[in-house]
Image (cartoon, rainbow, N blue to C red):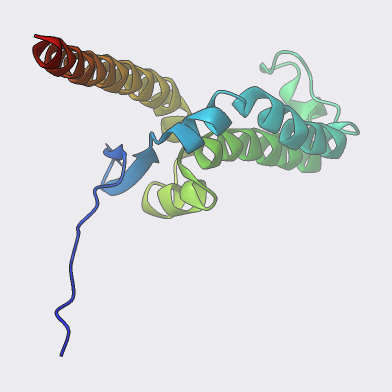
Length: 154
């Protein structure tokens, strides 16, 4: 019988824990290429949401005087649009279905919206940290190769 060669592989990325939900941010080159084009993807998805919300009339400011003029259906639609906008951001960052998973654990759209900026900054910081490590590793490998080449020439 032939022995199986087992070579483990470690995915490129890092865990991100939001509340009690642990997510995975894929920082592979392939995903980073997509991630840096996220604006284009988000614009497409946001355009779909914008079309849904076009008919909604929502006052710029809600106070005691204007609260009675707000249509409940419009308020629900505005809430749904905001929720979808937040969902898009989470799903684009961590993968489709992420927002549903988070919202099931933390059914508080305001809390999830507030933490979104912190999540984005933390992910960006970690990406920069990983990139610095990659540059250092490649510099070390390059130096070692050049050193070996120099040794051979002697």
